[in-house]
Image (tube, rainbow, N blue to C red; front, side):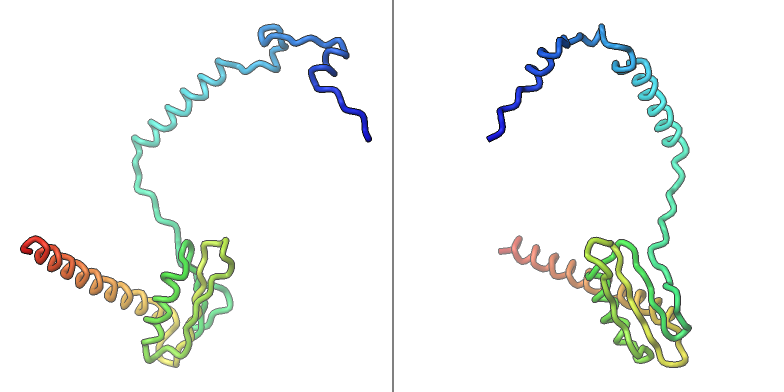
Length: 162
């Protein structure tokens, strides 16, 4: 069995080293209060400058055409999207009779990306099929929202009159 080691305090005392107060410590070990204050002031000034500009931020490109695409067969990468958009968009695009194939995949669960592959028959490009699918999905979502709000209103009226 190994001998019990001494605590750090005992070891320091045995070495003849005494605790030193912060005022006695070398300046390189003490935080520079003036620097901290000036950094805060600079941060406030930069924040005020940014607030004065208030330029609208451009939304980053969220859809990318992946390499190796042809006019009738293309893969697209959607940033910050998942199964919710992927499955709904795939369903709507496949309803288009000009589309031969459409599938989506999430490359890895820890990456916020969704890839969708579209292959079309001659006469329509994959990009046109994607644009039509996005437009149709938006219209479908609008109809569902309208019907939901109407049903909610009807229910509220029935509960109020009861």
